[in-house]
Image (tube, rainbow over all chains, first blue to last red; front, side, top):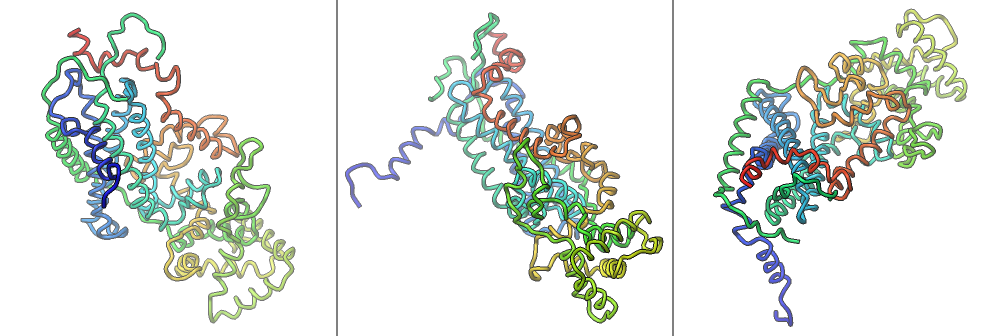
Length: 208
Length: 304
């Protein structure tokens, strides 16, 4: 097929190549100021997310009742629980670190926003995980959480008493949305690079 | 806008190596925590368990379901059509905006329909016939009088004072028998067919009683116990909900009938604020003012 202008494919390829040359996508050097333990928490968050996804996939392979009935399943449930706790711990440290760096500076507003929405999406994903434990804790959380959702008129659509709906939210819908947000966030980080320090500002400056 | 190229010094960096190291660290830490601490799994409470372990609470709750005075019967949207029920934001009836999309008739769904599935029980069949043949006002009077008398008797049918309760005592007694045999669990779940995943009806019935909450409070899961952040046993729960649960501990939310609606709205606004931090004057300047960044980039500033 021939045409007057470049194909959609060529345009996408050219834009992607311009935005993400290999040395930007997989850098082997960083500005000298990137030298603090706080930077580690971003990659630790990603790593914990991968462990959570992998342990969740193992639970999915054997079905939602597996961990009640087998010691192996209960152990994998433990892996899933602790990977999620670690994920949130590292993510919150990462978030506070980025806040105190004002990491939205230099055209990085969208990087902050995708990260913040991913944080909120993670809360929703974890919440549905607690609802699908099919144990006493899940019963109690469901009967309490329904009041919050019903109070703002959305309880019939986000029906925490419907185990099937919550299971699908937890293993398909929310991870999909969260996955897109995380990939988008990481690509923005790679594109914009790591935010530089404030100029040496011992003298007061006007509000930014 | 692309970031201006950093004109200062660079250092060697290995992104793949860093990622692999982080992944190995997280895997090891997760395995150690799972091996050493495990995970909680207190079994769910069935209606059978409830009716057996706390018969008085079950009986009393069942009588309020029949009388239409239970929490679910008077809940409002999305379960019942009571226009006076439901939470509000000032003049806005937000809870009603969703409509009655999960209708529940507690007398019919929790008591009468399950009992009508029982076969070979002539007294029960006769009691159901009498109850259904009575005018609605008479039914309500029987059920309400029995619920009140049961409450005074601590939920024990044997201690209920004599009165005009019609067939209600027999109906409630048979419902308890059905629940203790495990039949009620299945009937409430399979109302629309055998393949069901919606536990709304058994959970609403269970949560109308006091037993579930009593068990939850013993596990420090109550709303005024910061329960949202807790788990059964001594395990950490959703600690990241600390701000959400915080509002429930303080006035005016802790004393408001509309606390859920207010707290949800407040948290939605705060969440939006978190996303929009880069655009909010004052808030976006906090990092520079606190000077914690000088700690993060101390090497950089030291070499300037």
